[in-house]
Amino acid sequence: MKSLRTFISRLTAVARSRERDRDMDDEMASHLDEAADEYVRRGLSREDARRAAVRDFGGITRAKELHRELRSFTWADNLRQDLQYSLRRLVKDPGFTLIAVATLALGIGVSTAIFSIVNSVLLNPLPYPGADQLVAVYSRTADAAKAWSSYPNFPDWARDNQSFSDLAAFRPDDLNLIGLGQPERVPVEMVSAGFFRLLGLQPILGRTFVAADDQLGATPVVLITESFWYRKFGASPSAIGKTLTLSGTSYGIIGVVPATFQFFARNVHPSDVYLPIGSWNALGFRNRKVSMAMDVIGRLKPGVSLERAIGDMQALARGLAEQHPASNKGTSVTLVPLKSDLVGPVKPLLLLLVIAVLFVFLIAGSMSPTSCWRARAVARPKSRFAVRWVRAGAALSGSF
Amino acid sequence: MNPDRTDVLHGSLGLMVLKTLEALGPQHGYLIARRIEQISGNQLALNQGTLYPALLKLEHMRWISSKWGESESGRRVKIYALTPAGRKQLQKEEAQWRRATGIVNRFFRISEDAS
Image 1 (cartoon, rainbow over the protein chains, first blue to last red):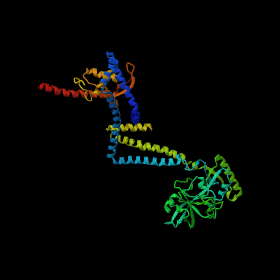
Image 2 (cartoon, rainbow over the protein chains, first blue to last red):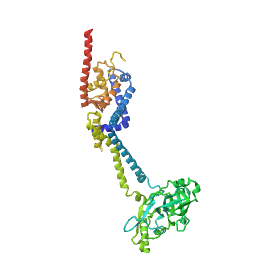
Image 3 (cartoon, chains in turn blue, brown):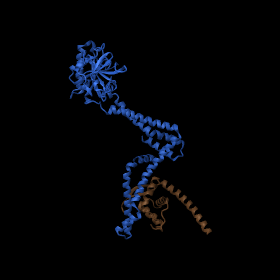
Image 4 (cartoon, rainbow over the protein chains, first blue to last red):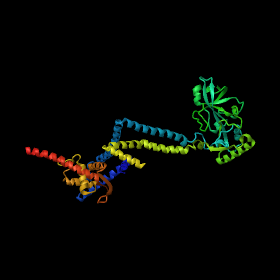
């Protein structure tokens, strides 16, 4: 208990220094008053008594300085002794040092890693304007609550829903790039025309997709990312209008997406190139029975609740099931706010991790060295610092 | 400074404080200072101010403890008391002091005998 008090008093010593100063002032003032009283009793005038008391005291400022010095010195001295002892231990025993350093490094590393995840996932909301209105829209089948959607359903959803100001579909792919330096496999994201509008993105150069780009037989066009633009075109504005040959098709470059744009959703990988999904014509892509790794997000109209959107979309799905029983029978939809869709299942886990990390940090930062020292100190009970560390360790473990 | 009065011997002030507290019980700073001056027969040029760093040092060593209280005249003063550790320390220091002064005294006696 006593060592815990010492530990705490040491921690708060700095904070309490002003209070201690006031205490010291009060104490010395009382002393002078008492002394003056005695001189008055001996027959001096109040003024002379005061002067005599001050003379006996011999330099009030000096006494206060000494007092203050001693306070800070004692504190610093204790710290120095502890540090010296630790250093001596560490130098004497490299194995122990290694463990202590590794524990600390691990503690710091893990907490930094976890906090950076927590910061980007929990603390920073999705980096889009009006991120709260974004909703992930999945197909619900007998097998899966969050199934991929079939592309032919998407235009129906987009046209007939009452709840979304925009609905966008997207799917990742990898295409072969030739004709621009070394051939390479380029990660692409196929997106519907409303995708960038929905996320509030402005291109740094050129334009984004319009409906006319997003259909079969349209002139093939692409957007490239800023990093790809730097890498392949030296950030030249003349990149707009150049062509990109991807897996045998030549696409005209119409715009550049800023590097700050990141899209967070299931089924997304960091892409160099964006293509209009509606111009894609792979076998089966336009079959309602087939879903080819395509997901959908929507932006709720202002004032529309998630519940209303769910009711709306489920009614739509029922209509489609009646219209296309062969493919859509038993298929409904699942709507989840995009943010909770991304972090929802992770959130409690992350919070748990944060707590775990705090403990790891406490353990690595203070418990582990102290308990190691405690354990080691038992082997060398003669050192008075060892005794101190045993006490400190005991106090720490008691306090946690 | 009065040249007739012996300067406070380095290191002995703490011992005097401990002994004073043992003899009188808990006291506040001014009374400790007066007591030391009186016992020494006003032979000591005690700058009363130097008492406070000394008290602080003793407190840090946990040989004395302090708490706020009231003086006889009703002033808010810090009252110092000897701790069990301080009592033990006092006994140790007293024995050491006696041994040290005893040795020095013997030297003086020998030189007096020789002269």
